[in-house]
Length: 135
Image (cartoon, rainbow, N blue to C red):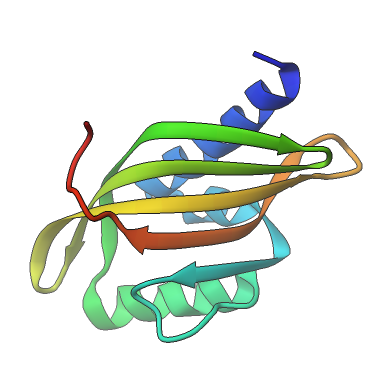
């Protein structure tokens, strides 16, 4: 495995672990400030980390949203020069005022290599997974 591929996987692991553990500052720090987000649960594209923070705060305040666990599997990294595309399936257990739920989704995260060598996420796209659970 190339060093770039390892670094992208480490960046993805950091992002997923921070989300799974509710470390939202670490999670949002994994993204460039101008990152965009497309979620099947959101009405429209979210156009920055600052906007996503506001949206997430609304979910927490209005619905009691919190992540209980997040499992990443079926992972693939495609290197495209200074850009990398990370795709995986995720099983996320969440809690809201309505109770607990397990979500089965597919996710694409696009990373770019920054001048200092770090890989930051610049786009995240989440969609429902047709067949539930790890294969």
